Length: 424
Image (tube, rainbow, N blue to C red):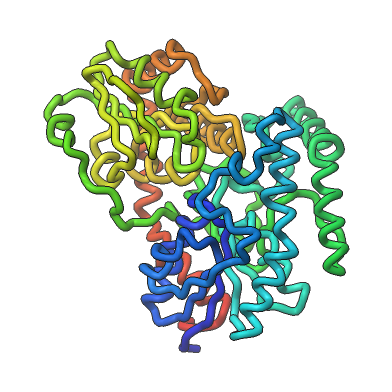
């Protein structure tokens, strides 16, 4: 069967949830499919640039480029489990009713064959039981689907195969279900009941039963005996468009001829560069390396002679000359690095970052510092270990070969077309 499809994208209004779907939309529109995209206004230009039609989400759930502390100032006083629960409720669950009504309004104007959504956009996953189209989920974090041979998602545990590991995993899962996330799951179930839907299953991710497009490659994931049939690993879902110009110091940096260490706190967790960027610059000030840091909109003051900074950096030019990347574990940045064979030092303990770090560590392509605020000594030691150890680079390059076999946008479009029944 040949033809075109009408597709509706829906994503949380933050970069890490929007950017991975850009190559999918670009590939689908290039093949003649109609794509509408429901998300935040700050992404309108990037969405229209890939050929999709931008549809503004309800202003009450649009972040408008603000970080979570600006959106929810009350969370600043919270810590630990209380902060995690608050974020799950306020950021991901409370918007569900507005998400549902907004998407239903868009669909009433013109029906869609499928809705594609990031796994955190729960409202899109609820359309089908409410009489709407089937959903395709896109994994913008490591795999969240539970399995008996995979540690529970969240704490960043190492996989284990012996009986003690199984006892540990069962105990942690019980704690997560019955203590840590129980109030969150009860809150979710109240929201579902208000929509006349049954209680949710264990877990808080919205993974499609029809097709789940997982960002990354299978070798980066924790191994499991049985992969669900709807899961397809599609490679690095990153936006290939070069958005940042070369900084004025580029030629001088390249001319130094030293190993390049890139440090970043990503696009969301960069409000306090004192967590990772500044400690890395200080830690490596006397090392025979060149440090290149992305700083967003923040000033960093005076720099040592071997350090260079820019608000944003052209990764298509930077990563091929990078020897080590120091990161807080943003999943998109890790995909970019490993796709280029760059080994990592990961220091992140919020959101999904412990799980990202655990997968990097298990793959052998980097080190996991198990903190968001490593000491300068720990950073210096880790960077030197990765630079001096050929195994880390070799493992990263092995992953890069696997990534190179996946054209993520085209492969995702192939899977979507097969599901919707066009171009079979």
